[in-house]
Amino acid sequence: MKTAAATLAIAPPTDTQDAFGRSAWFMVWMAMVGTMCCSTSVVLINVGVFMKPLAEAFGWSRGSIALSLSVGAISMAVANPFVGRLIDRYGVRPVLITSLIGYGLATAAIPVFVQMGAVWGLYVAYAVIAAVGAGSNVIAYVRLLSGWFSGHLDGSRGLALGISSAGVPLGATVTGPLGVLLIEHFGWRGGYWGLALLPICIGVPVAVFAIRMAPDEARGADQAAAGKVLQGHTVGEAMRTRAFWLLIAIVLLMSSCLQGISIHTAPLLSDFGLGPSGLATVLAIGGVLGIIGRVAAGFLFDRFFAPWVSVGIFGIAAAASFALVGLPGLAVAVTATLLVTLGSGAESDFVGYLVGRYFGLKCYGQIFGAIYGMFMVGIALGPYLFGLAFDRWGSYKIPFLIAGVGLALLCLLSTLLPRFEREPAHAGS
Image (cartoon, rainbow, N blue to C red; front, side):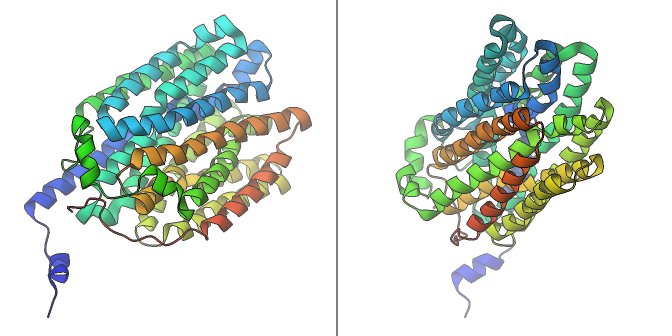
């Protein structure tokens, strides 16, 4: 005799579920467009593109320019938990709109900051962009989609997060080459002015007219009642689990190693003799591979235990990092940097997926904000230390070796993550 649960499991979807599913997948594509316009995709990820132009214009070292990303990353790390709390309380859309407008204006003002304070002005500008722009990043979109992809859509959450987070490399595919071309024709100031238009002209309309929380989630002033509807851990409960601290360590290694390599890709390839057009092509190909990596990772997360999938993904990046140490040359450098881009496809969707699985949606924004804050700490450390190493030794070999070891350790830690149960994130689902 079949149980009621078994009967429900094989029942065909209702018209309401079909409509909900269409809305959910529409939200995935809008979230992908949104992440293309986040402060990470538009400004922070392109520090390497502006590194040599700024060095030539002002005589600054690569290490001092890379420090701007470190300052921005620390600023975002501090801002993330507060942004998560605002999202948990007021919903995604108000936070997104405010953040996109604010960081777009701050990006356009970078030349003013630099004129007033030289390299210190650059640091202040990146601190403002990162803090104000924190709400435009993946923290908003993974929270949004984790709410939509619960209940009967729970089994597609990994793919949904993978597609949406593909907006980061897709954004890099657009903004990296765009930044190179803008700088070539209008100088570094024109590069920043052009990039500033993306969040305001594309991101804000998407946030205003398309982004919506799942209809069964409480909003705004009703958020206190939502704590009774949404399952999951409080921040304190999450911090008492092994999974939380393993994720903290994994995220720190992930971001410091992968972003250290990625941010220095442009100057590395330029040092090997690759010109602006070739560099723009490589950045575009890297963006496409990043998209493939993220979507494939999300697809696999829904079918296999996500930490084991990540071992294969980050293992590719580790092998590429070691190749950059032992096999010099332009062809190897291009191939290895592209493999790092492919191997880093599990970054944000890996974290967002596991936070939802381990800790639920009750305090998702705050927990994700705390863990993703460590991601930003890694971004602050990795690229800056890579720059310092280059300034001292005139080579990237030592930091690439350390990055390879760090990525190998990351794979080991991923095997220690506990199993999680697949269950709806809403009590009433």
